[in-house]
Image 1 (cartoon, one colour):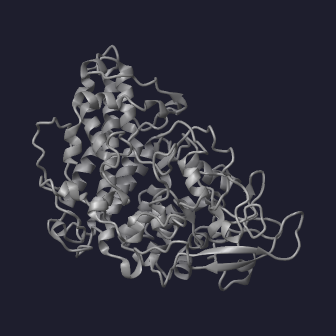
Image 2 (cartoon, rainbow, N blue to C red):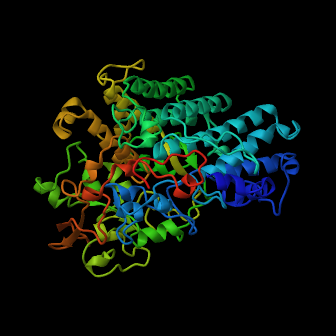
Length: 616
């Protein structure tokens, strides 16, 4: 990190900030084309258009779940969980258990994966934000009013806060970068304690919130808002209150743990109170703003509502969204990777989605569930609507017809004889495809304006429910008259699922409302990089136990005759072996994997960094 910050001159950084703005967009209006050649600070901060382009490049550093145009890999985080699997490639060194501090780039997160392009690089973002905040007031008022400058400062601060929340969740307490450093600056710095890190991020979020509007117009969709700031604080404090950090003992001992860089040093219930207060602060302000943010809920169209919630721009539900690319590109890297099994959904995940009546899906013990896990013989849906908009299953819509992911079908998986369509390839290896974000792999996404939900309203609701439960007040109405169950049921009602009740929790989750909430988060946020962080913060590696919960897939064999041109009955065969077995679970698991390593090259520079426990 030291070297990356120091090695690029101020002039070249400014020039770099002007690159690649052509693939960033607010709303559906392109920013002006990027500048060519180098510019100095004086010229950049003399015109509004140049300042906006610089800010656009800062936005460009926000993370993303998909990769396009061969820029990034897709599926890494989800395929560490029970929701997905890197079937073909076997994943990275993180999956195999062979990752080290010297091989850090293979991990879930790194602060500076690509500093030259700035792609999702926190270090690059911090330097650019430092330049931006130090210079924006030099812009003449005739170019931009002071009010607008303040809003742009708030946007930059909240982007910085977003990166710091990512660092907090993946690495613990780290050094704080609050300015841009010149080559001769003293770069000796130590890590912050977890408590200090949390406080600084909260302060930064609060500063941003005071500068930002509650909402923006459709034309400016994607810009940071006060609503996003309050929601981000809820995410931060929910993670902070969870047992990974909020505990009577560290998840793994070592120098970083002893210095409280990787846990608080104690358990305090008041951390859950802070998490609850953060969620309620959002609800309180949203009420004042006449509930500008609400779940997409056009009655009678549960699937469309859910799809719109994660897929559509300016939908009233996305609180922080990424516009890293202008439009979806179905020939981009993510689509190609999925076609060839870089990541695919698991049977474990398919089983999580409840029956439409709210009962638990169980095809091992319920013959009717086994016979018709997705549709009746007349093709009526029998499961939680979120299943069908997250996964592609046999009998559902696909390419203007019904999907045939079975032996002899048009989407026949390769392990059953070879995929028949180049757009499908190996996606059916586990018995299903992935619909979320990818749709039908045909033309639904092509040329559609791009939007990636980095933080959605359902997360705030479920954070509140979780905090109420951990405080022992799940059944106690809050200031808005809602219990923890009410917040969960706001999310379920949008997809027309029955209310969750204490009786349901007792019968389906052995009395654990905590497990019920984690389950709800899994089915709501699949492939939005939520599950891994839930497993980490609750230290729930047992979800991935290779004996109790092996990663599984299934195949389908049609039986009987077709009805109206389609098979309606199948036999299903389960498999608990994948092409490449994971090695980071079971006997290979080490608690060091809960947090990422600091690159060994940075540790060796001796400027104050202490490695996370267990990494060498």
